[in-house]
Image 1 (tube, helix red, strand yellow):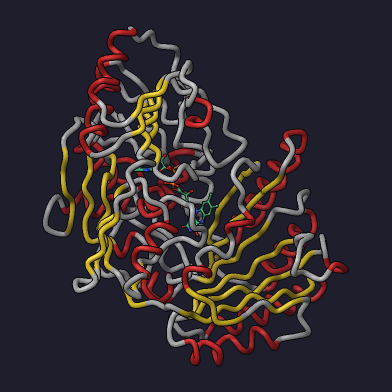
Image 2: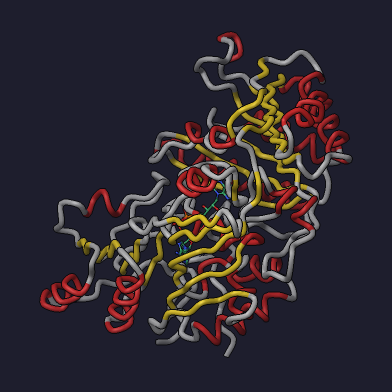
Amino acid sequence: MPPVNALSRVQAPILLAENEIAAFRGRLTGSLYGPDDPNYEAARSVWNGMIDRRPALIARCIGVADVVEAVKFARQHDLLVAVRGGGHNVAGTGTVDGGLVIDLSPMKAIRVDPAMRMARAEGGANWGELDRATQAYGLAAPGGVVSDTGIAGLTLGGGFGWLRRKYGLSCDALLAVELVTAEGAVLRASENENPELFWAVRGGGGNFGIVTAFEFRLYPVGPEVMQAIVLYPLEIGQVALRFFREQMRNAPDELSSFAILQRVPPVEPYPKEWHHKSTVIFAACYSGAPDDGERVVQPLRAFAEPIIDLSGRYPYLDVQRLFDEDYPHGRRYYWKSTYLDSLDDPVIDRLIAHAEAAPSDHSTLDVWHMGGAVGRPDGDTAFRSRSAPYHLSIEANWDKPVDDADNLAWAREVHRDLMRFSDGSQYFNFPGFLEDGESALRQTFGDAYSRLARVKGQFDPDNFFRVNANILPAR
Ligand SMILES: Cc1cc2nc3c(=O)[nH]c(=O)nc-3n(C[C@H](O)[C@H](O)[C@H](O)COP(=O)(O)OP(=O)(O)OC[C@H]3O[C@@H](n4cnc5c(N)ncnc54)[C@H](O)[C@@H]3O)c2cc1C
């Protein structure tokens, strides 16, 4: 199979014989849906309402053997493959027009070994499920901040969450993966088994195979943690963001925080007179002892008269679900990413101007404070951009198709403008797919790109797994 244009997510119709489809279905323990199946419509939908793709077939796998069958069937019939874990990729790389979706969402088995402080989770689990299983023992793996995001896509691309500055990224906590290759072979990768592959899957995304199981190192967290959520008017946004910047200079690693620029949702408990008005939110989680956390987050709460202060001691599981309601399935989403070299005053000015100009009340600009353990991984991984002090996610979130053009234009303009304050690297988990393709990946991965391309060349020389932030195989 020749390497196809990496940006191609559409396959020309391929005629599949009914008897071959039936034989494939018969070999699966899970289900196989085609367009005539009553389950097809629900099965083809992904989280982002902007994505409306029609795969030829959707294989809902139950177990490694199903994944192997699906890979072999796709190869035999030259089908373009999309791999789905939690279905949350913003650009919809968990589905494909005309090809085969290999959907791991039924594969959710999780086993926790509290004595060894490790968990094994299948590739279709989401963070809510993994957190629930690990918190039963007072443990956690560093995950994302929305509970129904898949562990798979998020971990393979890096993984930023509330524990990042204390325990690093999700990919840093990996001990091993079990993976089905483009040839349909089942491999394990860890520091000692296929170490180059293990290096590549920790930050290189879904380029190298289908991960059927992740093994995570766990850390003691909770059950309660101190969380700060304080809303201030955007009128004092400039002073607020300067204050945030100064506070973060000496923040302990236990504190992982954001400053979020968004409008106040028109719901309880926010005061009515503030609904739809622009704010700066200080959002932080202290992952150590809550008593210490109260002291550490106090300045963020006392900086000025807040619109509302929702801070308190919360179960870690609730903190992990805090933003869930802001990201309903089916809304329209278009996201961009850039690291920031600083939060200097010119950056702050631009952030405030862009927040005010957002066409949708649901859109946000999220300034993630990085550093801490993010910059000190335990071992070498493919993930790059570990030294940036901040990351900016630009989230256009809106409801109506008629507003698509305005929201896309806003996100693109913010990105174009703020990229000036970065070294050009991006975190590709947020956009989900890089419109500037390989050049953006090269920029982000730097020297590591050619090593990634070699691993890709070894494990997927035909670029079978290409519906992703695609690394082209070295020849
Ligand atoms: C609401 C929301 C909140 C988010 N919050 C965070 C956050 O806090 N921190 C953060 O870092 N990111 C966050 N993200 C971004 C997130 O990391 C990406 O969207 C990620 O792709 C989601 O993974 P998924 O498994 O749900 O996606 P899917 O759409 O299922 O998969 C995305 C891609 O991952 C690969 N993939 C999926 N499963 C497998 C597998 N088993 N084996 C190999 N490859 C696979 C494939 O290339 C696939 O195209 C968030 C996204 C959303 C939508």
